Image (cartoon, rainbow, N blue to C red):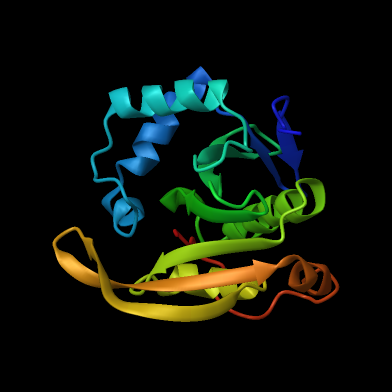
Length: 201
């Protein structure tokens, strides 16, 4: 059954929740940062109109819509401040396969928030939604994102060389994946070393 009543996921420092109208200014601000947008699908500056429409759509959708991205707002648990977002896109062909992505605003990078948010999302997808396989695609230039995916226990499955035309150049598409059995094993192990910077897939 679809999680139509989804409200929030809570971790030690973060809350992954539905977007609210008052998130608009912060959302547009970090998506308009060229450093944040560099490896993402949108261009900077990001328009308030696009932001308003996305927030409206997310308030009407739920995380289990096949073939559609659902964006979770990432907020600090202590203050409620919006610091980024992460997304899940269930396969349109197999409901137990999901793709994920994530973004942390530059002011909140290098504090491990991206790792915490992705692990919270993986827990929801595997433990609550019964996923068999979760994947993430990463721009081959985005070493911070690849480091993050490795630290949460996802495997690098392959590289499609120069397969994506992104903002004026051909870039590699790097695929990471995790199975439910691997997730179960990863929860008993400490995070591997590395730089806890933002990733964006």
